[in-house]
Amino acid sequence: MQTPPLNPARRRLLAGSAGALAAAGLGASGLAHASEAAGKAAASAAPAAAKALPPYAAWKDADSVIVHSANTIETRRGAFGDGVITPSRELYVRNNLPPPDASILDDRDAWSIEIQGVKQPRTLTLGELKTLGVETMATVLQCSGNGRGFFPHQPSGTKWTVGAAGCVMWTGIPVRVLVEHLGGLDGDSTYMTGTGGEKLPDGLDPKTLMVERSVPRDTMQDAMLAWEMNNEPLSLAHGGPLRLIVPGYTGVNNVKYIKRLAFTADQSPVKIQQSSYRLAPLDAKPGPQYPSAWAMTPKSWITAPGGDGETVKAGRSLVRGVAFGGIHAVKRVDVSIDGGKTWKQAALVGPDLGKYAWRQFALAVELPAGEHTLASRVEDSEGNVQVEERIENVRGYLNTSWRDHALKITVS
Image 1 (cartoon, rainbow, N blue to C red):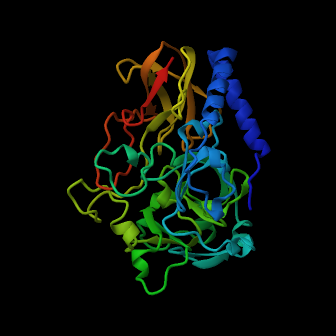
Image 2: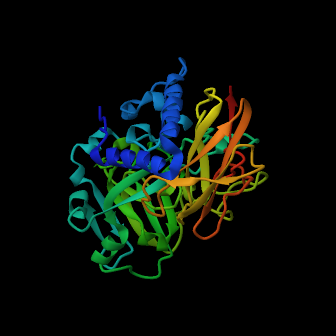
Image 3: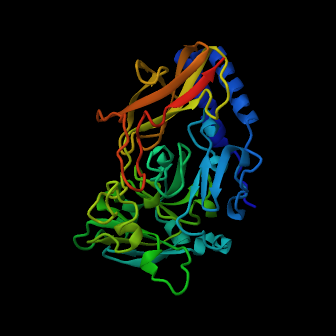
């Protein structure tokens, strides 16, 4: 089984994050308390009836994730730790179709992708892509349905809370570089469309099942065809050998096992584009007349203390969490320990890995015994503030409500 190791770059990020916590004036005692809380979180192990990891993701850390199904695996709130990069073994998994056979990784460089809508359309192998250019960037990867579990109407689909998200490093070729190499765009395209390489069942209309997503064409400026994640060859669980990365856009738009990248005049006609992943009102049937689950907006949540329901010791504590702006950088994060009645600005800690990555935050507080509701609220560089209330929609997409994501803890 593939077991991605903790690479040197990851260790440096962890060390830098810990140093930043201390530099922010949060002190050794705060770090010690954080370690104690993390230890308690680890002690609250997965329930005995927890589902087993599927074979293609058997290398994941079972104590850090919740297995909802063979195609949906969530990171535990308390497992988000103090490092800015989410370890591959703890990162969530969401597949719209079962992954292809693992044999597609036997010769990664032989994987091919068709490029259309450019002046010199071609089919290129992964090996050829690697000769044309390379960059590394950090982005937040988040399922469109993250936070669905907080919708009161209980929409269909996995009841994610906060764990269908992570911040990861991608390495690959920028799409803009590839397009330039192929002579530039051909014609008046409006969208960039990626098609996945999953095997489709026989006898069914491919349009009802295939994973093909269209996003605005201008996303190509920062998009990437990635073959590495967190300094390791891209695993089957996360779309290897090749995945389209669209920074700032929800996970479904980051097409796995990509076999075709086209610049098109219209959005894809398939179901996953036309009716799935649409923000339709509660009394409506989803369809192309409603907004698509594309760009993410400002969002944050508390990860500790008490991230996994453990009781918190009264006294000084370090409230910690993660925040991101979607398509804009994080400007500031405010924290409340009384359910949003009062707020204090938290320190941004750890390395700043660019506007598409998330930022860690921390605030030292005194917590008396009793029940407390910890909340966070992020503002991006354009002045957009995380909303208090969710936007109701039938499928439970794009929940960024700080009130929904607040953490209720018991202090004794």
